[in-house]
Length: 485
Image (cartoon, rainbow, N blue to C red; front, top):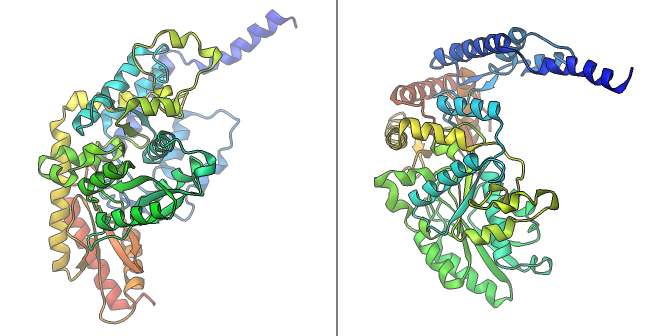
């Protein structure tokens, strides 16, 4: 077979990857029906399903042979979308719930169909303008200056990594400095921060955990003392990482006092606001975030506070030029792209060159709904947490600090037996029930249950259901004694 004949034969097989209009309509109808069936039952589908196989059926569908879409959707329904945690459920009240707004799914569909390359302005000016517009809106909403720049990334992990790397470069730290460099945080800082520190080469840096007050907030006065002590010992304090809404308890560190300290000491202030940052949009909560606008960098997750699908994070840096200098590199094969720089390219502000067009999933619902229902939903989640805080005490539970945002701690203390083992058994029993999903944490040796209200589908009925599930599970455990120290 000559070359041309071989090419034509291969083309016939390769064209199977391009379904015609009739086949596309068939696919679309089947997928839409599958999605509508799921959404139509979303209030009845359990928040958690115990499963013996845990999706092992997927392993039988080996990659290689072609299968029908209906067969694959049936397999997904059994092995993918049924077992384990259902993050789309309003009953997801553990960890930090994600979102999943329907218009975001449509945005992702269109982004995938058109496959715009959102990394470089030259390649897709519209996609880059859209992302930059969203970041400018975000910076303005959080009272960051016009000099700020940022990036839409996959989540708080990468956002924190970009910010910590930028802080390292702004401080002009060299490898020989790393053992003397000091980073300050509380023990409530998200664990992805530690991964980020390692990823940017600072594994050998000194990490100082600043003590917390009774509400699990960093003690700014002790921070000042510790920095002075470290400087006296010849170390290089260069970064404070504080939280605007911790994962464990929802606490907001005293950002204004920390900002004063960082300004006086010429230290980079980074705020992990991945969970709590969008509550800044709620007028009554803004005073709690005072000092946020003074941060040198900030991580925030639209897939949390804006209810978007997982994989939507953002980082902002006060001085956008510092971010550019930290991330920008050139390649000869991209020389044409550097001729058109009307807008800064996302690839110059993050580790990603190839990147998903995330902007559309964020832009479409914000434009379609406007901002008001987002703010109303955030306010509602805080009110629901306050409501739960009152009602859970009526059931005999002990509570942690009053919730600042929409996360709170609570536990039940039986008159006899181990408190920790009882609460671990309690959260397991709730998971087995499946109507709601709750998670636990351990702080200073004590096991607590967490309530995290952030799903846009969580409403008053959900919280009442949660209270009922907890009351029933507590009573059953106390009657059976099914827990041990």
